[in-house]
Length: 165
Image (cartoon, rainbow, N blue to C red):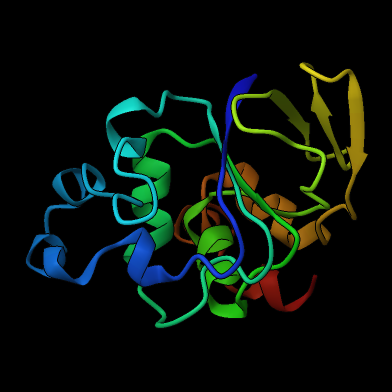
């Protein structure tokens, strides 16, 4: 269970990982201290482990900054929920082991307590007592997330397993 941090449409990778901190890209824990600070200055200092980033449409648009989902995860977010994602951002999330869930986020409010069941495809909003359904992830993506990301998946299973799934 975690708290919802609500964001709007078109949250770019520039808002997630501000370019002025590019020099910190080799120090990801330090860069994570600045995650989403241009969209919500208090986010990095107040997010707790297990919280959820909740966007609207086109979350993660812009450049393919691979650090963007990494620092969201390092900050403690359990998953990113949005109505839609930029394609590269979505894949980068899965590849680093951060669930990116396509779900209608209109009914989720700032601060709602959420739980996610990836297998059943349900976001449970405990604050409102409602369930929001989402399409289950393809099996290979679910397995990548279970392993903690693509690198760990390949370490355990090899890359040929991906081709056959």
